[in-house]
Structures are given as structure tokens and as C-alpha cells.
Image 1: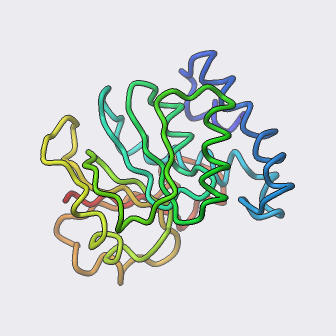
Image 2: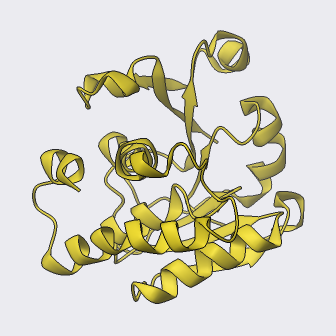
Length: 206
């Protein structure tokens, strides 16, 4: 939690309590279902929660914004972002039912009222959203093909509607077709921990 409060010092007491509850909840679920790598559960806050919140460093979503978390797994980046932006609505989808159950259970346990989940492949999601967020689920061009249909034309934020994608390593090939419009930010420019080197947040307007 210290790493979260270091970079997000203005969290309400409720937000702090919700974030603090994640450790025990994910440990309990991880004992039943391998949602997070067993080696990585001790790094939950840095490698998963803070990593998810990097998107908020690129754009602070305005109240009323709708966000689709594509391939949420056990709830990342959707649950940390839903905690941070309680006046926005998040829909978390994944093609693996047991992971969606984990995300729903965690959201219910911490009292998240702005978050829904669905066992759904991206191709079968037909609602419209202001933004799609994702953590390295698939190459960006493939993601764009699937979610382009889901981006609303109504604008509410400082950046045009589109995709936020968290990636690691060399992203040149994925960004090749989007060089003129995509923005890529190094997470190390926001977070000083060694783990964030060579990790990026990509924003692509659609």
C-alpha cells in the first residue's frame, strides 16, 4: 500500500480501505485459482495495482465516463481504476469464466458499486464505451480490430475516446501503423521503482 499512497496521496479513507483489502482477497482466491502468478502475489500492489493505476497518470477520467476493461483476468486494470474513479462506470470482461468470478467477488467484497463483470469474449461485446483499457492481452493491431466497434462517438474527456494499453518491452512493431496518432509514455517517468523500467502506457484515439 505504501507504493500506492506515495503516488496517489489524495485517496479518500474509503479508497484506501478498498485498496488495502485487495491483498487478503487475492491471496484467498489465489489459493483456489491461479489468478496471479504464485511467485508474484507478494508484489500485488506494485506489479498489479500500481501498474493498473498508471493509466490514471495519462488521463484523469471525468465523472460519467464509461470504460471497458478488455481481458480483465482477475480484475486488472479495471478494479484499481474503479476504486480510483468512483464516479465512472467500468465493465470488466474476460473469456475465462473463473477469472471473471474472481473479479466479481473482489468487487463485491470491497463494495464497488461502479463496476460490473461479464464472462464474454471481446468479439461478443456490443456496448459502446468512452475508453477501452487493457494489460498486454494481445498485440495492439488485433485489439483495435475487435474494439473499434465499441468506442462511443460522444466525447467527455480531455483526450478523444480510444484505447489505453499497458505494455512492456519493445513496442515498435505494434505501433508501426499508428505512429502519427498514438502516444506512448514510459511508466518510469511516473514511478521510480526498478520494475517499471521498459514498461509503457500506450494511448490510441479511435
